[in-house]
Length: 212
Image 1 (cartoon, rainbow, N blue to C red):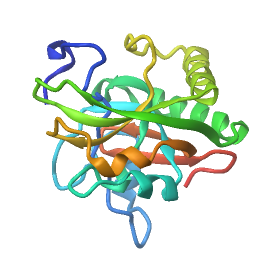
Image 2: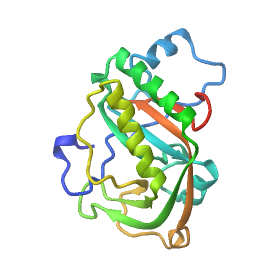
Image 3: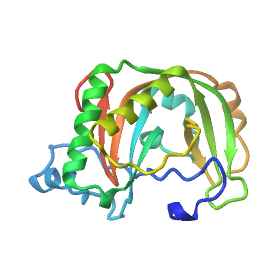
């Protein structure tokens, strides 16, 4: 995947916060895994994951509607809200502060409603060509503003974000045609979680609830 400085075109087609999710633990975290949560060393399949992000995650039933054969798996479908930079440049104190403000925000934030109004092929001639679901809605814009305000409150120096904000869900890479099956799948979508990812270390916080 090219670095941020190599990205061209607008909007960018590479989500800097793209991640590989950890297997769900069956017996809880070990002491080393708990420590890794705040050091960014816990990864899946031994692969490094460089990006950090805050994202909205659709409700499971909505994700299933958008899942494509050969596309991104359910546990990767998300709408990036804020790219936080390189995970290894965010120290333990900053990680804890980000998790704390996101949990606080999620406690006060009801589910976020959006609308899948169409589908697009992004970067059709580039190395990261992909099909995305385009999403809009006042709730998404409000959530973006709330996250920005929360990060400003803790004085976290996040990188410049792409403007204007273009909410989307990347569904499949290495394609330049929109599958016909998607054309009937426009309509309302519900986001019920905020996700914080530091590289491969992922925390989901249910909206209106506690950390999952």
